[in-house]
Amino acid sequence: MLWDYGRDWEIDELTPDDPREGEVLVRLAASGLCHSDKHVRIGDLPMEALPAIGGHEGAGVIEAVGPGGRLPSVFRAGLSLPARRVSHSP
Image (tube, rainbow, N blue to C red; front, top):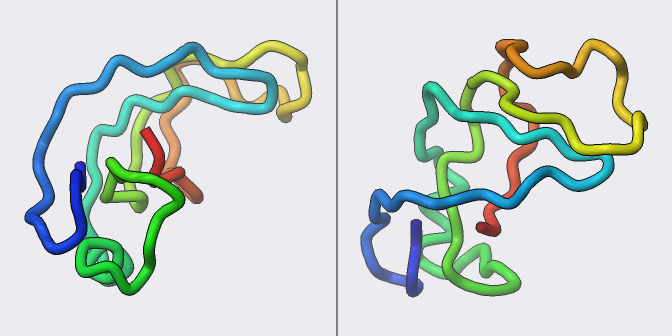
């Protein structure tokens, strides 16, 4: 997590909320910081609010699917997948 621009990234434990409609909760198995994370850290790509979560390119397993049925049926708990877009916000 990035708590302030210009500081180093830190590893922190978070307790996520349950997924909302149209969302899935993914437990990341692998992730890395990329070039855009560098720009977030130094403030070239400012976030709406800090702290920010880095490592938005990763892969993991779906833990839960939000209510509402708006997602394709392939999105179910236990499915392994690459993460295509992950929010920087906790």
